[in-house]
Structures are given as C-alpha cells and as structure tokens.
Length: 234
Image (cartoon, rainbow, N blue to C red; front, side):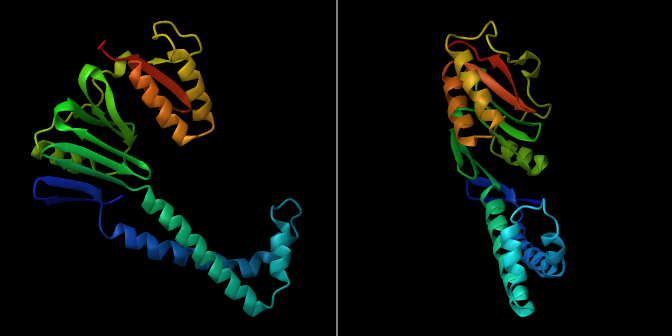
C-alpha cells in the first residue's frame, strides 16, 4: 500500500498514506452495495443450488418484493463493506520512530522499545523485526509499508538499519517435537504454540512467543511451521 512518513518534533511516523483509510471507508461499502444489488439478479439461481449454504436466508430473500430485495441487498452490502473496512483499518501498521523509542502498533498489538534496547532493525519475509540485547527479537510484526521510508526514518533518528535482513537467518532450525539443544520447557511451549499456529490463534501465538523469549528462544513462523534459534545466555 502507499506509505506516508510524517515528521513531528522528535518523532517520525511511518504509516499508510492519509487517503488510504477514507478510500477503504468509501470504496468497500460501495463495492458491498454493488454486490447486494447484483444479488437481486442471481438469488433465484442460488436457491436452485441445493449445496449452497444459508439456503433458508436466500429463500426468505426471494419472498420479498423486488423493491424490498433491492433495499435489503443494498443495505446489507453497505454494512458488510463497512465491517470489512473497519477490520482493514484496525490492522494497519503504524511505526513511530523517536529519539527515545520505537513504537509499533497494529490491531491489538502495541509495543514500545526503548532506544537503549535496540541493536538493529530489519524487514524480511514481509515482517519488521527489532533486535535487542543477547540477539533477542524485541518485536516481530507483519510489515506492508515502504521499506525505504522506514529505513530513512530509522537512520534519521540514529537507529541501526540492517538492509540485508536477518543477520542470524542461517542459525534457524525447523522445530520438531523433542528437538535437541533447546532449554528445559521450551519443547512443551513450542508444541502448544504449534497447535495455536495451526488454529491461527493470534492471542496464544503472541503469549507463547513471549514465554519462549523468556527462555532464550527466538522463533519464526513460515507455512505453519516453526523455526528456532537460541539467544545469547543472560
């Protein structure tokens, strides 16, 4: 998506361009209304498909007059479009780079990392990662903004930008149950996290990732698989 960076005082904010939010709030409801309008032309065909879900709702829809079908279809489409638009807006990433800290906010995820704890920042596999002491990852969140704007903001405020990506990428190993070399208790946490990964349970994934961080284990996810490496000992 188009990205904007705004400098205010001692901070620079990297986020989606200001027009992106209004575009979703207008465009998606309009698209939903168009789908609702189109539904009035194909609802009879849908009712004839016995395998199609929610047949009861579509049959009720066919009982309405053509005018009510149009009104209900348009209204339902607009509401659906608004719901999707707000979900999209909720998941937009904002990175605030300041003299004293880096802030990350995306949906329910919020993290502020103090400058003294940041040893480097990189983007890899469409994720932004903030490295800290002992080669730990202090933040790891989905990234869909402009890398160059992020890099410029970090350099402007004196943070270490790693243009070549993860300097420790070669150390990651795929996790399998009972893997050797992990600290005591880590295999159990990774097993629970694998279950959460397969269920796409975001809350559990983040909570269990924090537990692994406390054990000195760094984890990356790819295609529903976990890859791990060790942080340096405390």
